[in-house]
Length: 454
Ligand SMILES: [Zn+2]
Image 1 (cartoon, rainbow, N blue to C red):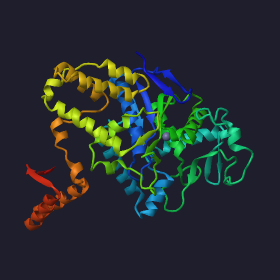
Image 2 (tube, rainbow, N blue to C red; image 1 turned 90 degrees about the vertical axis):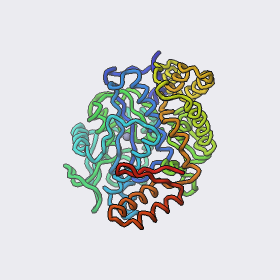
Image 3 (cartoon, rainbow, N blue to C red; image 1 turned 45 degrees about the horizontal axis):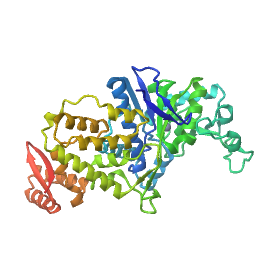
Image 4 (cartoon, rainbow, N blue to C red; image 1 turned 180 degrees about the horizontal axis):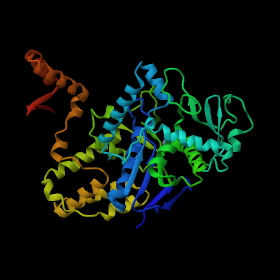
């Protein structure tokens, strides 16, 4: 059976045919790192992780290259650093760590490459120079702009019509732009902003050129799948196509895969309305697989409504599955082979809700305790990145009732270790008592301190 993917470009489900089955190449737009990731940011992380796992299964684990970039230079980052009076490098480094923690927490495999924009500035400059020399871009007041009307196919992904977009009016167009729809490839940096030397003066790249340059560097001019959230179709992905295809005179990505929006309790996520949910804040109450199951219970192209009820429902399901699996010794369940039923659902445009309903059926079917069926159930769940924990560990996880702040616990343990190494045993004991009151038990073994919940 073939892999069918819904391609935004043709607005249709298309049979996936890789350029090179020995190196299937996928690029997904990653985070702009200035704040904790929210559940809307987590959706593409999980959706494209499922696709990455699926491609590895089909083409072989070493035959898939998955690139997810990190945007670590951007106006939003500069504003956030200024607001918090924090060094930009410190802010991005810290946020990248948070993001990695979150991705691990939801069970996402590491991409093959995770390029950072600031490490690929020369490639961006080179690409911009190419666009200028081919007269697709022009320099104006230290800015370099892409002339969108020079690309006859501009708007072909989003279906937007350039004539409508520019509609004759120049009201509100920045003075350095020829047309309103022209977009920035390079812009001058103000004092104290990150800046790199370029033929057009000290400055920094625009966001769109980052992805064109990094995808070309790591995947080539033409690659298989470009993914991201639906909100990136215009202008970000439209502009990536314009830049890359004009510079290279070659097709950019062969398939465009986009995940749908996320709302929280039926509303658009917004900090001021108090319905803004970060992945990090969920860690105190739920194990990562609960987040993952909740996320993939909706098909990736559909809008996803994030609710506490859905989270609790996923938690109940996983508790039930793990409780059943705790009756078996893990080694007994290792001989499952390929699972065609789950595979079939995923091959059909990553139909995870259907895969989950198949899992429920398999769970029913293995209640007899038949080890072959139980192994098959477990193997199927693993294909979705679920049931990867040891049942005993899953079931002893009680943090949700205690609301323990993991970071706070780690901090206190570090302080206690320091007190002990300074032979300050009164302080060390006091910290141990403090943790005890929080419901945390420490275990010192072989020079290392681990902790668990009472
Ligand atoms: Zn991008």
